[in-house]
Image 1 (tube, rainbow, N blue to C red):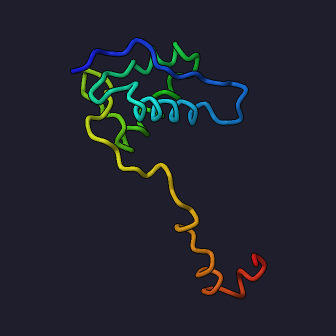
Image 2: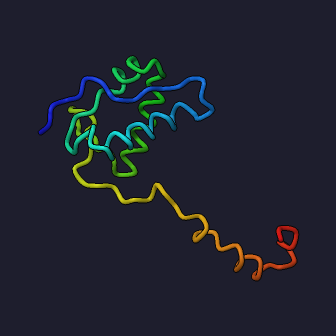
Amino acid sequence: MRPAIHSLPISIDRASKEPIQSQLRRGIITAIGTGQLAPGQKMLSTRLLADQLGIARNTVSAVFEELMARGYLEARPRRGYFVSDSKPPVTDRVDWAVTLDWESRLNHHPSRLNHIR
């Protein structure tokens, strides 16, 4: 098992239009992707991370819960949060041009979507 981290390479820009929760989520995902946070490594507690970044603990908890659901983190009872040993599926980047096939939608409902053309 890897040693616990003492700080995260994440900074929060309060002047940014990007929500704090999004900045934290992006920072943790980036740190995992670049190897700054290794698989199996223990994360800081939500309280300590919130104090370190100067943000609400609820914000950190919400991000940790989301990252658990997405496969980046895992919780171990009475031990804390850890970086997941398995790689999460690559679903963060969606090719919207393929996902939203506008041409077929326009052909399917031409009278309702005529104003888009």
